[in-house]
Amino acid sequence: MREWQVKRRERTRQLIELGGLVAKADLIELTDDDRAALYGAFLTVAAKLRGIDGAQALVLFRRKGKRAFEADNSTE
Image 1: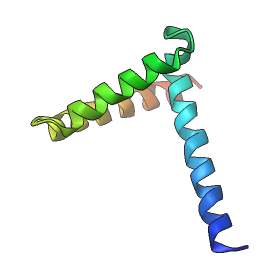
Image 2 (image 1 turned 60 degrees about the horizontal axis):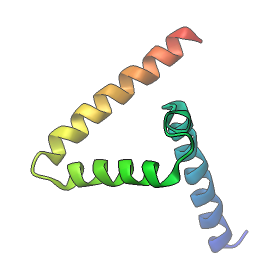
Image 3 (image 1 turned 120 degrees about the vertical axis):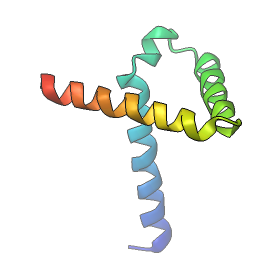
Image 4 (image 1 turned 180 degrees about the vertical axis):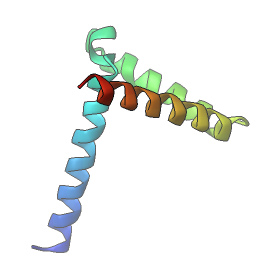
């Protein structure tokens, strides 16, 4: 398989996984599948991460995400 095909498949898989996280967080239902609202929310998070307290925000986001993953795994 050619290198560009491998990269394309890796990117496709990454995008599918990220879309799964959007669905897992119930953001599709909460925004009534409003893409502008979702994009605005993502831009807000990105701005926070670029801010002065970005590193601290990332730690908090990561901690909350890990707890949610663990809670999901324990209920399965």
